[in-house]
Each structure stands twice: as C-alpha cells, then as structure tokens.
Image (cartoon, rainbow, N blue to C red; front, side):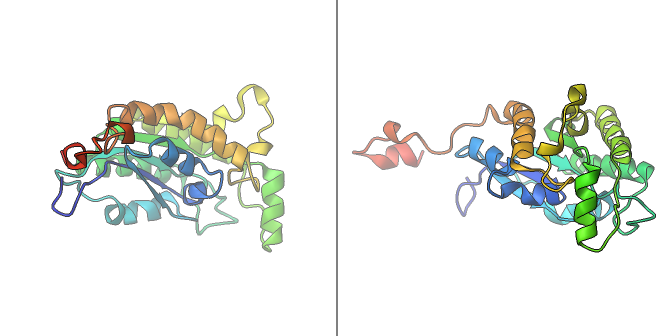
Length: 238
C-alpha cells in the first residue's frame, strides 16, 4: 500500500478515436472496465485523430516507469485507422506502411524499456473500412474519400507481423469482421468508427486476451458478506 492509499493495478487502452470513444454508451472500453471492476482500473488513453508517429512521441508522457506499488496488468495498443489514410488525399494523418510497422515496434520496445514485458501487451489491428459509408461522412465534411479498405488490409498485415515478431498477442479485427465474407457494415457507425454492435464484437474477442492477464488479480477489498460487521477494521484494513 502506498503512503497515500491503495494503488490499484491498471489496464491501459492506448489508441486513436476508436479507443477514445470506447467509454461511450455501449463502448468496448466501458464493457472491459465493467468486467474488471474491483480488480483494476481501466484507463482510456485514446487520442482522436492520432497516428503512430504522434502516439510514439507522447507515449512517455502517458505511460511512465511503474513504481514498486504500481502494477500494469496490460496495455492495449490500437492504431492504424489514421496511419492508413491515403497520402495524396490526407497527407497529414498518413504514415507510410514501413514507418507504421517501425513505430509499432518502437512502442513495444519503449514499453519493455520501462518494465512492461511483451506478454502484457495486446495489439489490435484496425477494423475494415466501409468505403461507401465513410465516403458519405467525408463528403459531409467537404472532403474526398481518404481511406481504402484494401490499404487498411496492408496495415493490418503489418500490425499482425510486428506482433508476431515482437511476441505480443494480436487481435486481427480486420480479418475477424470479414470471416466468410460476412457483411461487416453493421459493425461500423460511419464506415470507420465502431457501432455498438462493433464494440460488442471487439470486446467479446478482446476479453479472453485480457482475462488471462488479470485472472490472478484479487478482488480489492472483501465481498460485503465477508466483512465482520462487529469489527470491520479487522476485515477491511488488513
């Protein structure tokens, strides 16, 4: 126990807008936090619009060297939806494929350098893109279609390759959502971001990976029926 009180273990969600919005009603991050209530804190560190270059730059400000009392149970790294933007249409967010892969490697290397081993890292590849729906969203903002599902596939493959080489678990969302050519449009709110159904899909597949990293964590403070009501301090201040 730290001087100021009990320090809870943490699961950190580090990604772009798909992560930032994950605590909204029906969001996948909120569902994970609900599953882990009383075991650890789930921190939303999603940065809307960010690519891996910007993410790598700010990462040391977001996840710092854990202290003896601090426990990082898992870090979820979820980037690629912005990196894969088309260079000729959206050069601001676009990151070349090779650089994207190197940035992911550097993110993992940084986490390892501060004591967060690869076994605690879960990579998520970006979801597929519904080009028709996303084009409508782009046009509504006065822009042209700036992403392509076939390009997103290339970034997914790069993410999976990096995870395999670095020894982390990876959730290939792009492939999972298109198994047997299923219609994945209902998983997406606007062609790019997840709908509630898409969030449930992601949470269902992510939870087993996080569960094995958090299963050994005890419930923080005893179940209320186990408290000695005649001497609560003996139960609560062990």
